Amino acid sequence: MDMDTTMTATAPPDLAGLAPVEQDLTKMIGNTPLLRFRSLEPHSGVEIYGKAEWHNPGGSVKDRPALAMIEAGEYSGDLTKDKILIDATSGNTGIAYAMIGAARGYQVKLFMSAAASAERKRILRAYGAELVLTDPAESSDGAIREVRKRYQESPDIYFYPDQYNNPENWRSHFRTTGHEIWQQTEGRVTHFVAGLGTSGTFMGTARRLKCYNEAIQAISMQPDLALHGLEGLKHMGSAIVPGIYDAELADEDMPITTDEAYSMIKRVASEEGVLLGVSGGAALAAVEKVAQQIVAASGASPAVIVTILPDSGERYLSDPFWDELA
Ligand code: PMP
Image 1 (tube, helix red, strand yellow):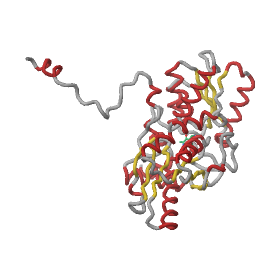
Image 2 (cartoon, rainbow, N blue to C red):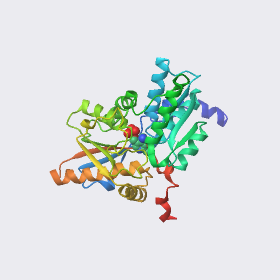
Image 3 (cartoon, rainbow, N blue to C red):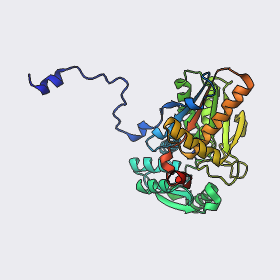
């Protein structure tokens, strides 16, 4: 028997635990790993986890709502191949729309602040999306105003999911992110922390977790000031408030400074080997404060704190805050 025959005659390798062969890119969206951050834990009874959303094929948490909004448009018949998908984005939803649009054959046109990172703009153009860059002084609100104007001028040629007001945004997290966290922690999660942009991640995930156990504490996080560097997040007090946002859902709302986020990113990169995006650094900075509050209030009581890490630091390597490492 020659070598090749021996190889084919042996039993197939055990495929259990291997990722499946996918025919459809969008099937790779969701079901992301939950990663533990031991160096942030005040004692072994307080477990800290972050959901590694950069494992989505478009590199961020926003693949989930983008797919849900596109599929809702396909089911309703509002999205057809002769329409142009338009929306305002801080970048990641745009990347998700552009990726899915390229895979399914839709034209995509995005309105985004000119201040968005160089990496985001290049990725969007690589997927074939058209970009309209808006006044950086108005951040994501400038993009929202521009896209509304453009849509109202000729609504018939566009499909406008309007991620800030589309319930499919938060429902995608209700169906997937919240359920995954419950399963991955085997129902042990006690605190959920997430930053607010459109608020879809926080609203959908917190609602689902509270359905499973209403004692779970939901903590929202947002920039401390109107002018901030937390790309993807909104300062609700000064921004156009998304229609899907309901402040009542949060048990607590925590302000985080841009510097707190930057120093957490650097710390976690060198201590844990995880390169986080800016809003992920802000999320872990908030988690650390929540952990300190738990210890101050109840000493050695156990807790399982989970947050969302929306994207990877590779999307921000051109940001000046890395310059000191040069
Ligand atoms: N972080 C980043 C990097 C984002 O792109 C977004 C989306 N704007 C968020 C956080 C906030 O997510 P959400 O829109 O679901 O509130």
